[in-house]
Image (cartoon, rainbow, N blue to C red; front, top):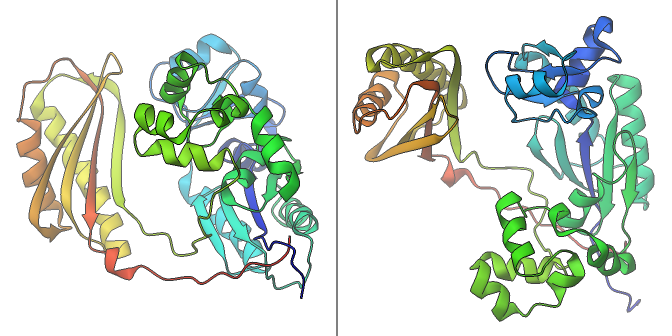
Length: 360
């Protein structure tokens, strides 16, 4: 019997500029050109940017106006989510040829636990290469991969050799890898937390590792224990094939700002119809209704109300939304409205997945 430690083998697959790459694949005229999916030069927010656009600083979540400023030659394309879902389905079928332990994070990325896999291949790195080759040959798109013993490190590693590359971080390489990593590249450390860490003298993984658990909990609350563990390579979260939907939402950005609550209600009715369709499709109801408002100055506000019963019907959702809309006076004209429903009734559907550990 070997005394060597046992590890999981986790692959994180991340498609390269997925939405933009699909548009370039389907429309040869867009290939090699800076493309932004979503938004426009006057309105909206960029959902995805091609690598040609990223060279100019165009990124997802920036405004279309800013994207145009950064890259005057940018080509805006309307998103086609049905097409992205169709392509994503093909990619996930490939994943399931290797393992049933697939945890989708979005349409374009997923974790795979290949500790035990359908190919009987002991090398997670070779499996990742094979999966990426199949995606390219069968779908026509490139993907990048990170391979390691846990989800946290695999997620970070997948970003290292983008686009169309992969990186493996073996067990004995994890701590040195994390020690050298800039703190802004730690998965789960956002912009605000990064700034706070900088103020505390934490710029790298090594700086983070030098801080005590008490220090991190004092400054970051419950997240402190997470940071203390992950920088030491400790992250025991399993790959969960059955992710529980926690909220269902629909929203819309308007071509012209809305300044009247009456016009807003008309638009919210349409948004509620879309939300109801999604709820019915997935047979989900919820108790908490949230109204999302983004003003013309890009500041955002949410208003919520929790009911004592589950709802999914448009008319019941709109009763709450109308109440939330008139809860207080609008501070400015509105560029985006959204409705979401959480506290869903699918919590009882949680699945338990047992995973074994083997040598890496």
